[in-house]
Image (cartoon, rainbow, N blue to C red):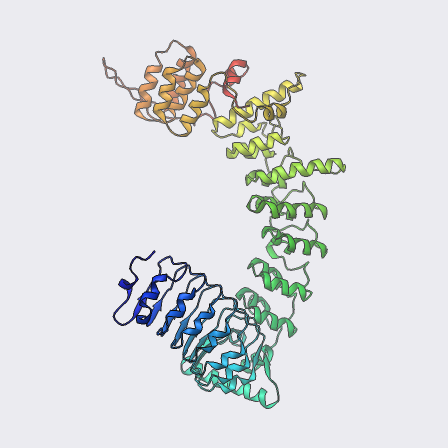
Length: 625
């Protein structure tokens, strides 16, 4: 809040309150309202003008640019002396009639709002010299603008109208004018016309309007406009160097009024540019849903023009738009058309599934309903399951499992969580193990991924874990349980995991603590756990983890551990010395030092794990259930 509003008021009557995080007009303004001549409220978060505005009867200039205004209060009618009103960059969709009673207005700017129409009462602003209504959604340009005889600046670009009133010729004093139609002439003209060159083009526009008016035409269409201003003969099917028609260019520029005008005039809808894109696919690519909807209504061919995306459907899936996906599928588009990577719509879906789970679940159900191939491989021999694992899309994997249940009841093929893919025959579990993604690995195991399957190199998923200790131990235990199951011991891997709710099952709680200490790089805590533990397994693996810190203090701990009576601990110290980049320790007797170059990479997990993996106590102590 602003403590003393009067301290911001200058002797000339300027009150500057920009960038003050205001959401409405401060009530204290009313105490100095008669002294305020210019009020600057730019860059705040004002959503509406309260009744305080009616007290500013002496106000000459009001700047509300870059706020969150959705409506203008009717109380604005009280600002009878207002000359300048700036409302750019707000959320206005309409303007109150009372605004057009401010006959003293000379400047009115409304750039970048969402205004759909100007009322006929705009003709009341007889003193208006500058009107900026660009980048809105005007459907029509009111012919009443011709009554604003003092108007010198008129900005109309970036709206949705497709016709210009021929009465514009009556605005004889305009010296600055903007309209995006000029960019589509041959050669293109500037969108904003000013200075001497601009004035010459404005004069030519008056000539065009006068000619149309003389022929009894009340409006001028875009094609007549482009033919008039083009030096060369204008052809609606003309393409540029990139084989883009005017429709392609309009879609890329977001000029929706031009798009509608070109479509109405018969511009070719299905032309492809040099990249193989149709105007419709470009509209999707640029998130211009309004243009895309207009082209669909105009019966554009939805089956062509996908370019590198393969089809418009693949792109719609990436945009997570269920309604558009339904529209494209019902039009006959196949969900199995591939992009330049060989990905189908289902491949594309699983890569972005977690971003919008609800919408993508609907899309996935639709793709399956329309015959998507669930286990189709892309160019690199990866299926949708592989890509979901690679991108850590756990929601996609869970959705696949649910669909498998339904498909199983219907006796249809489901998603294969154990299918081998890629150049080396990796399963989805190999992929997540290689990336060190513990959570996704748990999800895959729970939904039926087998940890004992070998790739073409003879490696199981645990062998690709790349240094993730917890994941290696988890997969080792699950792999062993699978082996027991195959031997008839009837250990249901998934039942055990769900039963224990994925908690760590350990004989001694210290093992969980050493994992946490290592993950949070708490070397001193690891050393403390080593000292306090009576379990040789915990002590030996604490030694290994401490050695990975590769610090001088670690080497002191190793020297101390070397004196342990436990053979397992002593062996661990020897291994650790080999993996230390530099092991140095001075004794009180001889100050000897030992330096061993690190010739080998660190082990993927604890070095002596496999030697004891058959020892049940060790396995139960180390591994996550």
